[in-house]
Image (cartoon, rainbow, N blue to C red):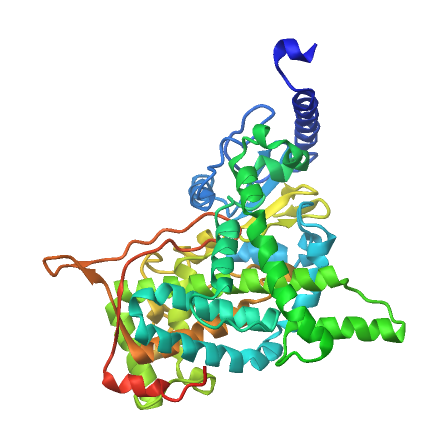
Length: 504
């Protein structure tokens, strides 16, 4: 009988289950009890706010709604699932830090494997553990900047070579040889996969996982099509580095430390000694791949955003260079030992993360139980977004928040504004970004090398007029900047001597 309507049975069953699920969730969402929900805009019957929340850039609309309802915490109902958006650092600390046990969960589409990988990675990227990676970061920064001297027009690929080179060595022990290394394209493909998939926990597939099993000819959801089309990129960046390095690790011939080598050797040692292993070999591969994907993209994207702002704000660039020259004498490249002597460069990096949070809504939390906050109910199983865009552009905290101004962090007794360093770009509570210390260290050493060596300038048109670069971000779990044109030229002839006798 289905043929008379030309509708596949799978479609009818899926649609029926979808509607039942929405109705059940909607009925649960209406049960407020004695306490009101946080404020928010009106939704639609059954669908709730599914079509009300913008698919692109919802963080900006959340800011508008926060101002409209004079609240730093907002409530939405998406297909029956409660959504809570936090727009201020204070509320984020109150809930995600002080009551972190209730908000330490993730929505159900982050499963137990995610939790296991996070637990293992947490041990490998503490501030003290990250110090052991400084040699790799400094070596890769020097190599990348030397190659930019030879090919300045390809600076963007070479910056990616640095960020990918660091995390591939840390994750798998793989050394990227040059900008044409196939691992570079793998990193680009993986960044596209994570950077163009829409807002995390913001698609119908996230709320109704059965939809992901629809056949391709029925898959109308853009995020679902993107996920299917880009799955190969994620898998490839797990499989190929593993296949390349496993024989050497297994035979004991691997050179240099890596996450994979450490846990691979520990795994088989436990097997020999009859001890239980917390991770399977697949888990080790997955965690090592996560380092390569997340760590490389965050570092590279922050570097590109920093370069763009230094071009748009040349006075900031001059001040950062003056600080570097004062420490190095202009006769050598900076090191990690110089980092504490360069507070202004640190402020430049912090201002980069404040102006453009690369994950403006972060990876969402989930509430384990009902909670009350200032007389408002936060329902159990709510998806919790910490809106970093709102927090880092909060006019109650930052003056002229849309202006790139590292001096805002300089203490008042030193002539600055004395504003607090940004909170939010790397998350809160028990789900704060594990790789933040590694990423910021990588950005520091690369930018210190770059500014010691080059002038960063806008390109010019045929009449000699400067063309300011334009900046746009993709939307996804980890956003990435779109390409823009600029000019990178050596500061003087002396800087070429910084890179003599480098071991390739």
